[in-house]
View 1 (tube, rainbow, N blue to C red):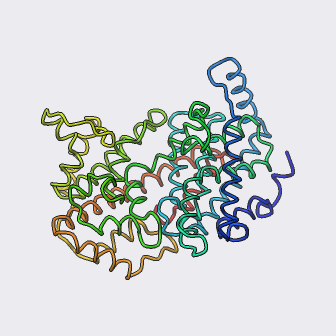
View 2: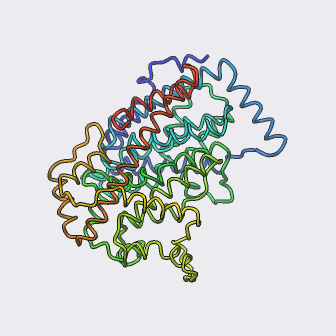
Length: 460
């Protein structure tokens, strides 16, 4: 075993540089330094992606798989994987301490939900070979985005550089992962597959043609895990609390009437996007994900997000959002709308059933600002979060701009998604405890599940 993996983790150079990145200090504290860094990592990732090749279905590919599996099952492989996982979790802990506490899109909750999704897929699909290293890639693939909100609010850096970090976060994540991997004697083919998966999770890097950039097995699993919170209750929470500080999307969405033109536009009319447009786009356009478990997760998530849309808007808006499905029910044909792929019949019928069942169970009385505070604190609450009275006043004043029908519908949608969230967090806690009991203490699954419970204790 290499002595590198025995070193105190905080002394690894990658940790010092990553801490500077999270704090937006050192070379990352000024625009020139940050732009230079982004250019460097993008060029580095392009070179890697252009040169990356893997074999899967041929004889050479099977030989490579056999070598990777043999290494994973060796004493050195097991120890290296375990030590690498510990260091990866230390990086994620840094993210939980230093990333913006209201950055609902890519905070510690997102990292843990992704790895829970990866564990559900690998466990139920009986993946017990080198592919289970997707648990590491599902933790590392978004570490390049953690300080985005801090950069956007930094007067010296600003929104434009924050956007550059967002657009290139896969390359930044790849950079830090690659430097971390240098300190561990990882089997080369496995290391390259893991790096490829981290770099690939948002699509091919800039400057690399799609023909030269295809998905391998760990990449497919990583993308599937990353999509696990692009539907369902997690999608709603992610959209509501995204961009930090002022609950940006929610305030933006409520700054105008939720009329049919607004929800239908997909940003084409005024360049803005409401939470309802984002949610609709995700449930209509999410691509299939890995295996039967992944497909079931995507199916259930689309039903939950679709039910939120159905309950959360007035009937006139509902008819616009679900126009393709209503037309199908009535035997009519609509003009083709690329952004409104029609939902499968079974998902649509489940949305209708769930909406009817929930409407009968949910309280319909408007309880005002006190209930809004309770719902929002429950939905997006996390340690250190500051949801001030001033923010709540802002939110409630935005709600007051809506008609009574619009306000009642939106509150109903929040009630529904809060109930789903409570149920799902209990289910996740049960699943994680099952993983801890099922796998030995020196396994990657046991280590990650234990960390996930610790990190998510406040919502579990």
